Length: 362
Ligand code: NAD
Image 1 (cartoon, helix red, strand yellow):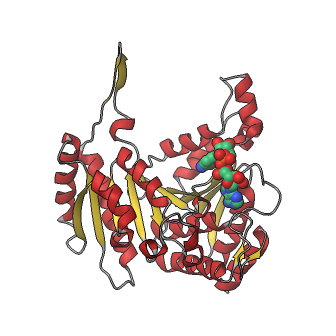
Image 2: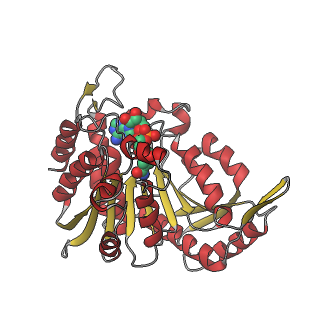
Image 3: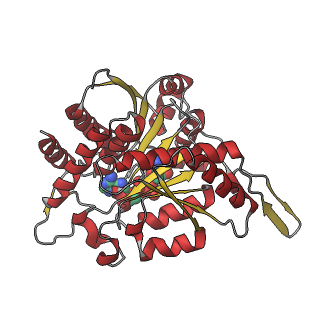
């Protein structure tokens, strides 16, 4: 790596500083980065009276990537309960997503071999699953006009060609990146309801048109109801799934359960070409265990791996972190949230797990 990439670090509240601190140690082992630390969420409300300041937004906009811990906690919930107009920590998160124009949410699903028994699904079905859900984040029914007329309610679903094109490109590019160094070629499954919905027919047409630029990527189309079924019956057949906001919301949670451990899940939200992405664990600020040194830092480390792969174009470095995390889980080391007391497991705190990941990267 020649130049130092600039990363804005927003540790946030609760366990945020612990898991982000652990992840920074891992990043420092991988390369040299130029960090800017800022407040977000509850701690920013305490210091600045708002969950996100303009200065933080400006620094995020000019960075290469943003790494976030988590925001929120009962302290601020209680204030809001007394005064609904009071600032809320979550406003920081929604504010930064909006300010950076993050239109694609990427959620990889790859059950760790060591944790495969944690899934509610049969091991032989999920072993070998390695897929990525690419969900459109800023369009569709969640942002359409909605309203009520007497005993009738409506939510309109709209998509433009531009919105579909950019998310399709994100999916094709992600498929290419995932296939680097892999035997199987890149594949994209575009999910819609084209047999019923007009937005889905436009979706399918547009994805097909974009695919012309990605002749090396195999493309297939699947109806959303069939996908919901196929995800649990043959998850190993998927590579990249790209879909609109509502379908993606549902399918990404369904796919997450293939791993059985939501606390291990990373995520990435991507904006326009050349714009910084936001990388964060799926879990929250876990105020019940904050400050105890027992938080599981692995979802944040895996989010940093996504940052390297999708935000900074450093896929080999991303692979190294993911392999190190796998190796630590294989060794049986477990933070309390993963510890079951089974033979071969050793219970460990945040710093022990972090040291073990660092040792794997040595
Ligand atoms: P949570 O994910 O914070 O915690 C749920 C349970 O999982 C808790 O028992 C917690 O101890 C455990 N847990 C979560 N992450 C863990 C980790 N890394 N290691 C070990 N255990 C972990 O969800 P919650 O309790 O519903 O919410 C707590 C706060 O977090 C709330 O204020 C909520 O609004 C906020 N929240 C923030 C985000 C975010 O910042 N993206 C997401 C969800 C919730």
